[in-house]
Amino acid sequence: MAIHAIKVLLCDDHPMVRVGFRQLLESAPDIVVQDEAETGEEAYQLYRTKRPDLIIMDINMPGMGGLAAARHILEYNPHAKIMLLTMHDSKTFVARAIKMGIKGYLTKRASPDELIKAVRLLDCGRSYIEPSLAQDIVMSNITGDQDPIDVLSPREFEVFTALADGHSVKKISSTLHLSPKTVGVHRTNIMKKFDADNLADITRLAIRHGLITA
Image (cartoon, rainbow, N blue to C red):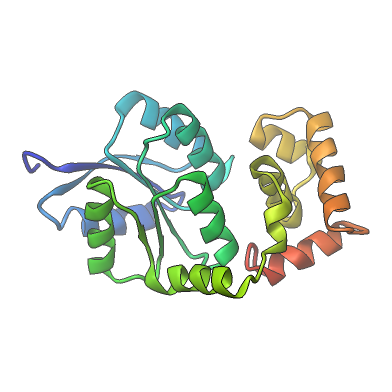
């Protein structure tokens, strides 16, 4: 381990993916993977107990998922340095991440050198958004192209994506640690905000904005 190595918590639910990213990260002399997690809950607990310098986290994981875990971590420590490393290139996800205080966003198609660069920048207190994704956000701001998903609160967004992905109220309640009544209230509010007649409308909206795949 380098004397001033950047200690990383690597969070992804696929063991082979974690092995690949660990090898890639540790090929740099100043980066070490301190711990690994495969669920959002585990990532949150490891962050609190080990306090790594940086968290690299997928969005889609069992349990609460990457965005919800990031929200909990940032509530615990607003200065936590988090990078999302995901297959999702939806500007909705990117915009949500930036608003939450997440400092880095890369897709898994990024080059190894770009990942190393992003880790070092975040460790120095800077931000790094994959250039093509950052350009999409800038252009949306210039053209005034408002994302309709913006009307959702962070918790409503978590419930929205879970509903769109076919999860039941009971399942969402267990995953997000909410009562079924609270999830039901969020579900009702989401349907009203989008003037949706049924869950199929919610699913189509999520697909259209790249939040889930068909």
